[in-house]
Image (cartoon, rainbow, N blue to C red; front, side, top):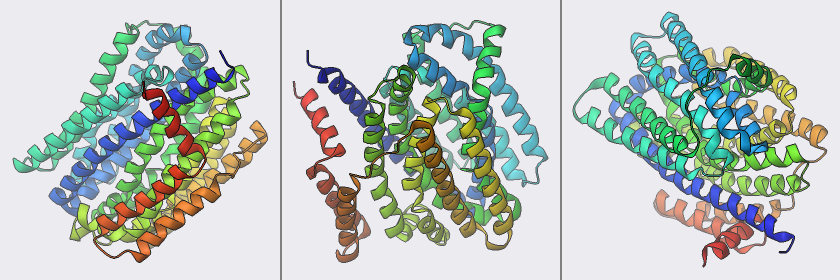
Length: 479
């Protein structure tokens, strides 16, 4: 067998795993998109703003109470697959207890915050969804480590489908704001139950109470938990601050624009989650192919993010009008400002995962603390006077700052950064897409479709990561 055979098999598994996730995540995002349309049009800016405030607030315990346990478990079972069942059985009871405590504390805090009554109702209802989300995160490492994320994609699509069906039913039956919120929560619960059943068929999840193991796990995860948690807090903290200093109407406008970032993040996460177990294994074993995986991942992720940013900027007004409706027209301003975010976030996500795989936990904690401090300071200073547009600016500035710090420390820690050899091809594809957007008359949907086709044609025709990846998948599937 040639020496290139293992590398080709790995490339095929990573490519197919990522491709399945991208396609499945795109389907899930499409379902979520229609749910978003139904909610914004059915609730209006004020009620939708209260929903955004509640979900943004409960996002905080979801990311903070994980305590890095999911990342640590994934890192451990990726480096040593033979310990998967033992680690999962002993870690799940701890995850259940920590998650319940965190959600309970945040519910009490939410009821004491100066939110309006409708937001507090949503906080109460969504606490069920927050707990289900945390427990779903607890079982996913098995699927991630074994590159079987197609099951997670299936669970996600199923849950999103349930949410859409229940949302339409709640609106048609006039069940009000609470009925729409419950529709979203039940979809999350279904996603968790499907993942739980699938993972339990792969490895036994019968709980084992092992306090000594819990102490060891917490000791090894607390730093990375704080780092990743704080690193994600600023993704939603602006919505919470906005809800406290501006009317619900503005929170609804910002939420309508921000929804497109969340949809883009689904695709970003699909690729990042596929790559992380391999990064971890290669970093733990000193495999020289680590640089190659990072380079290919960088090029593929950037190739996906660039057209998303162009579409958000060029078609901001039509996107808001078609989805949320005329009442949300001003949200297009925020969407244009947020357009660079996917490109920054996708590269930042890769750099963070490389540093996590390398065990640079304290460095990441420092980055997260500094970025969160800057983000909160900017939001507190600017949001009372300038509202949701300022929130969009601070989001982009904070992500750029985070990416810059991550690049500096990745260079120091890993002694390399991804090369920029592929950028001329991406620049050529971007130029073709921009020419179509500017020069082609017609309905926005037609122009956007042709522009995406032009971009795709260039990256598939030119030599490089995208063409090689699709070629490997095609050759492997041909038999």
